[in-house]
Amino acid sequence: MRGMAKHLSKGKLLRSLRVGILRRIYTRPNREQLLDLIKRLHPQDTDKRLIRIGGNQDGGYLIPDDLEGIEACFSPGVGDKSTFEFECAERGMKIFMADASVEKPGIDHPQFSFQKKYVGASRKKDFITLKDWMESVEIRSDSDLLLQMDIEGFEYEVLNATPDSHLSRFRVIVVEFHGMTNVGLPYFFQRYSKAFEKLLAHHTCVHIHPNNCCGVELVLGLEIPAVAEFTFLRTDRILHEKPVDLFPNPLDVDCVETKSIKLPEVWYR
Image 1 (cartoon, one colour):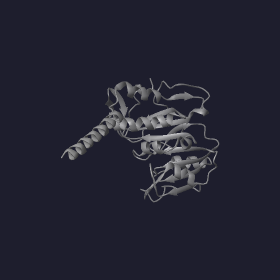
Image 2 (cartoon, helix red, strand yellow):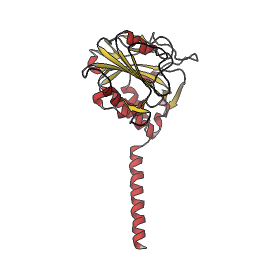
Image 3 (cartoon, rainbow, N blue to C red):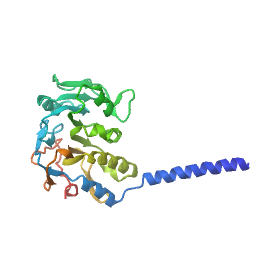
Image 4 (cartoon, rainbow, N blue to C red):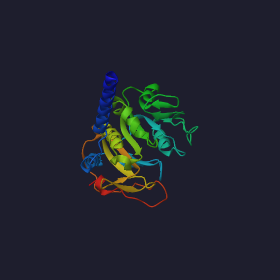
């Protein structure tokens, strides 16, 4: 009995330690922590003007006019138009696309290379990692790349699983972030903030466009768009910068035909 009691006591102690560790890891963020993250993401107006690639509505993005010399575009998540990828291909880039939910891109181009795979945090049946994908294709080891990612919420785990050595290969990164209104929840704050911190290690945010598909909600007293497109430029490409103080950009277009929404001021002021 005493041995069993000792065993149970040890079990309770281990469970208590695990719970304590989890509570420390997943502590609910406060308003100041969330505001600090948002301020670090304030878009910067740089010496590289923004241009629109991909046409109007969903699938078009604002990116820096700094594309010369980019060898390839990686595009996980394939839509029915692929106009962004098409325009990049017309500029001479190799286009690598991946999505297990479709049979092929909606349009063709000689520069397109498609894999029927999801991009995720680890390799399994229908998944590849961004790192393995980059290492499996024929590109120069020293060339700059472009990443355009719209994968319905998996973007956080993909970014968190990708080594800095690989993320820093991308001169321009465009990501549509989903489920952002969950950022006030403990687990999600850690997951989201880690992904943004990884991007900010080598890149600077130059544009944010809230997707008007899903609106804006108050989280810890701060206005958070549920879905937003972020554009990042690698910091070593920037000669000078200053905060952007006016949104929307004249080149911004609503993603869907519903009520327009504006980027809340807390995201840039």
